[in-house]
View 1 (cartoon, helix red, strand yellow):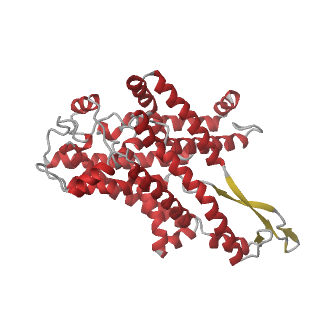
View 2 (cartoon, rainbow, N blue to C red; view 1 turned 120 degrees about the horizontal axis):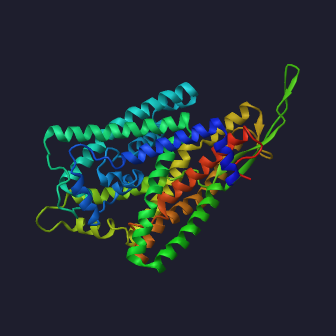
View 3 (cartoon, rainbow, N blue to C red; view 1 turned 180 degrees about the horizontal axis):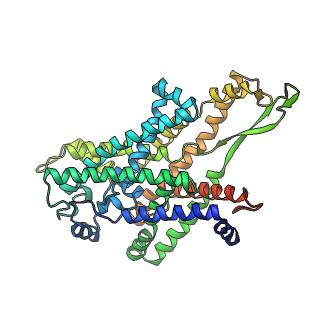
Length: 436
C-alpha cells in the first residue's frame, strides 16, 4: 500500500492532482475559522467553551460544514445549500418533463441542469444565511445556552453584509468542489464533505474520553470499528443481474455476443434517506418553537412534541425516524432507478436477461429484484442512523458520538470512491494500483 502511494506521488500528472486537491482542502479548512464580518469572534469562542451546541436540522449543517456553523465563519453554511439544490433538481425530474428531457439529452442537457443547480444553490444560500443570522441574533443558534451577543451591531448594513458573505462562502465552496472534480482527483464536493466530517472526529473522541473515561472511550472505538466494517461490507455489496447481448452483423463485422451484468447495489439511495428523515422530524420541533410563548405555559401539543420529538432519546422518536428512513429509501430508489428505461435500453442494443423475455417482462423482473434488494438496504440505513441515538440512551454521548448516522456513511462511501478513482488513474500508467 505504501509503495502504491509512493508510485502515485512519483507520477507527475497524478502528483499534481493530489497536491492540488490537498491545497484546496487546506484553503477550505482555513475558511472554517475566518469569522464573518460583524460577528464577535471572542463571544463565539466563549459560547463554544461553555459547551453550547446547536440541534435539529442545523446539526447536519454544522456537521457538513466542519463546525463552521457554530464558528459563524464565512463558510458557516458549508455545502448544504448545494446538496439540497442537487436533491431538489433531481426530484423535479419526476414532476417536470423538461428536466427529464434535459437529463436524457446527454452532456449538454446535464450542463444545463448543473447551471440550474448553481442558481438554486445561491437562492437557498441566501435563505439559509438569513435564517442563520436570525438564529445568531436571537441566541437560538446555540439553543439559548449562551447569552452573549454574537452580532453586537445588528444594523441593517451589518446584517446584509453577513448574509452576502455567508452566501458568497457557499458559492466559493461550490466552485472549489468543482475545481477538485476537474483538476484534482475528482469527486470534489464529496471530498469537501468528507474533510468536514473527518475534522470533527478528534474533538468528538476527546470529549468522550474526558467526560466518560477510558472504558466508554475504548467501547466507542470498538463499536466504531464494527460499524465501519459493516458499512464497507454493505456499501460494496451488490446484486449482479446477468445480461447477454446477441450477435449482430454490421456490414462485414460481427458485434455483440458479450456477457455482462447490471450491478444493483444494496444501498442505492446512499445517505439521502437519512437526511430526508431528519429534516422531516425537525419540522414538528420547528413549529413548536414558533408556537411557544416567551412568558407563560406552552400549549399541551407543544409540550408533547418537546417530550417526544426534540431530544431523540424517546422510543417513539426512534421508531418514527426508522420508518421514515425505510420509506424515503424506497421512494428515492424508485425515482433514481427506472426499470422500464433500463429494459428499453437493453432491448435497443439487443441485450436480454437469460430466461427473461425482452421488453415488459424484463422491466417487471428488474422491479422485482430492486424491491427485494432495497429492503435490506433500507433496514441497514435505519440501523446505522439509530446508532448515535442509542449511544445517547446508553452512554449519553450523542453530541460527541462520531461512529454512526450520516458521518460514517459519507466517510466510508467517499473514501472508497476516491481510492477507486486514484487506483484507476494509477492503472492507466502502471500495471499495479492501490488496490490488490
